[in-house]
Length: 625
Image (cartoon, rainbow, N blue to C red; front, side, top):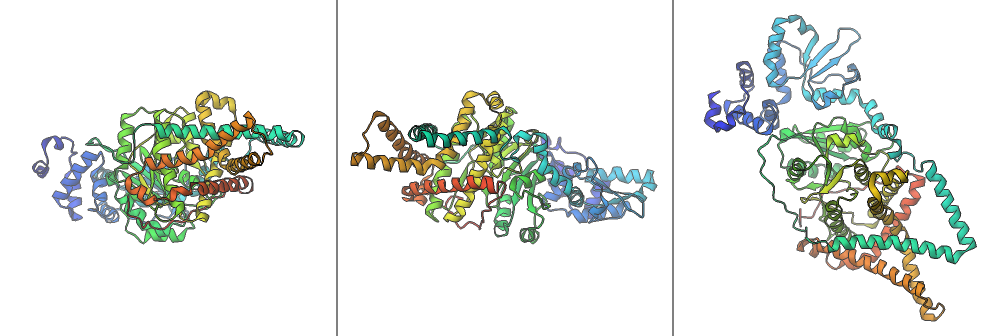
């Protein structure tokens, strides 16, 4: 094809695969001109894909029309919508989710039929084969790759749902949250409660003093950890990064988005995902919906989605959780890398490129990258303003500290990027853990892998009213409780996997955070009671009492101060202006956090796997996104 050499430089030409005459005529019969073919050949060489993939991704070629024309030229039947009931769920079926090429259909009244989906490069070979063995025409038909995937999803749906629910528990039972208290844990929990009650009745002053000291030390350790993050040099509020040029080839990147009752944000989500700066032919975006969520499914089907999108329907089974949906879709992930977004997310267009740049220059032990989450509706209410401060301190302060020192890093629920092979190796997501992100981050660390943070953010809106915030936060606390229980089931194994220092940091991050939230009102009551007793002269100010009072005061008001300064310091000036003076309400915010923690503790026993759904609406904020 001489036209190629007139359009592109010789060094680009060297990468281009030859196009046979029959394949060229096939495309021309479909109205594809030579210039378009040349452009897509060049894109295929640059991206490491195929001519067919680039023609489909560029919307120059319609998948159904192409395969119908292939069937006509080969003299074969064309079946655009094969019946999944005729597809057996045999071992190896799921390979057709990643690379849909052929599917065997079984019938009760006729011979089996092989359904074939062709890439352009295979057209001539099959045509020649049919000429050599015409008898094959009786047992062969043409369909589309999308039709093969759809039939494969449907045929293996029950088996995949069982695997998504049970696989981690059956293969790694002690890493699963399916059982809340594991044997010995229940025994020691009951024993500890009994000893505590006995101590309160027999030596109340001493017992309460010991409890107070334990809680105070956990609170103080958390305060010191955040103080270290605050003192760490380097502000990150710019959220910019210099990306190195990359000429390809590009690996396939899978994007998983689990949705449930999210019809209002469907259009915003698709717009954000379409903006990702990654070749569409190398994108595998799975929109994962519950099969009975007709409203969300209809919202997607009413839109014109590009070839990079695929709607995955998850059949109903319990627990109905986000990690179960993600695990279900993992079977069909085509990418070397995977990222997870939420329905309301607006990721930075270059975020995949930054993550890929880190992955390709890092050792395999760097298995996960966490992007920062930035709240864009801080102006909406005092709750969203404090939420914005909290997220700024966490994702741009604390997590970068843990990343830089290679400590255990509890992931955020969205915008984490994985090496697909490693994600599958460690068991994927726990369908029974309602804060699957933190659990997976700790499990990766225990397997010897490390997580890092990147700079380019994902924008999202925070809940604006107390009820929605408490429902979301109580689910998070419940999941952190599950994660703490799972991780501490075997203390000796935990120390072996993580080492003493990392185990202590885990206890501060998860256990300390939980205890701090639960005990926060108690410490405030103690401070007020101690002040009242001292002022009235009812309590002499002993060295022990003075020390505890001073530490408690530091814990409460120092933590308020570090929480606020850490968050505001990492924000950009527009973000700080959006927050305004509502940072003064940090005290009520922490009391609300304590309420959510107690609610989570109760739910851990009454409904451990219930997913408190957070409703989302399209963003109205244009401040930072």
